[in-house]
Length: 80
Image 1: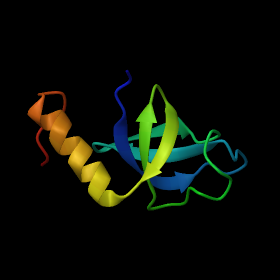
Image 2: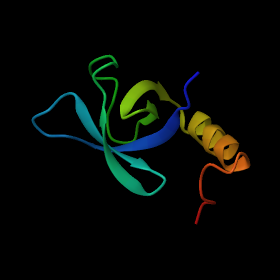
Image 3: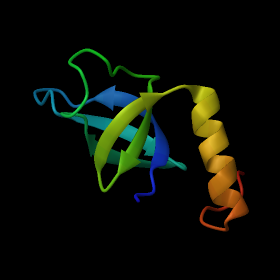
Image 4: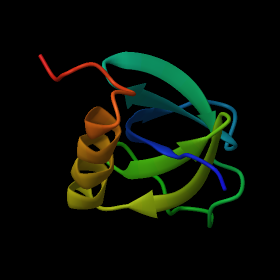
């Protein structure tokens, strides 16, 4: 079993079609998007991330639900 963390794509890394910049709880990280369909990721997309890799695209509601579950388990800070 793996634990995925949701994040929102802020930008695609120029010159590298395998990487995107993703906001994860207010921290911008580079995430490998190479396992997803080409063209499926753009700024504003939500991703489920595990170990630095995007596992799938998700909706904003799915991201909110995942964050709420993580907060209930005490794994994330409360939103500001």
